[in-house]
Amino acid sequence: MCDGNTGHAEVCRIVFNPEVISYEDLLEIFWKTHDPTTPNQQGNDVGTQYRSVIFYHTEKQKELAEFYKSKLDSAGIYPKPIVTEITAEQTFYKAENYHQNYYNENPEQGYCNFVITPKVEKFKKVFKEKLAH
Image 1: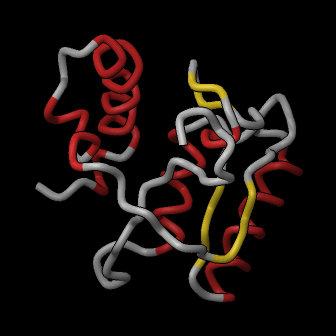
Image 2: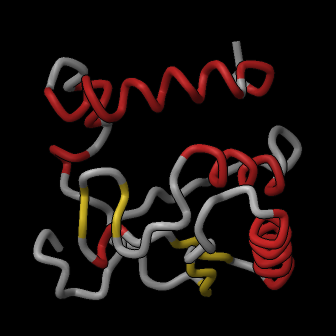
């Protein structure tokens, strides 16, 4: 996957209880915590495996994702057009064990410290009312 020739995307599978958090809330978090305007790139990570993508499981999820993408794009929230793909769920491959819980296991690692920690802090600030205590 590292060389970007598999067609796969590096993603997180989110399993959620809609009675606890809505799909709309998850979409809001998604749009506010990454750059959906850079094709095949997130931060310093470049390649097709780092493209912005939402894999939906139902037609309702597809409709909501497309609605919010269109709404954000037409509102000019971002300086460039949103390039996020919205596509049906495909086969999901769980990453190797050493990738699991990587940030919590390696908080002092350079990438974690300089790239992820600022995003986590922003997330905690912007979504503090949604965080479970």
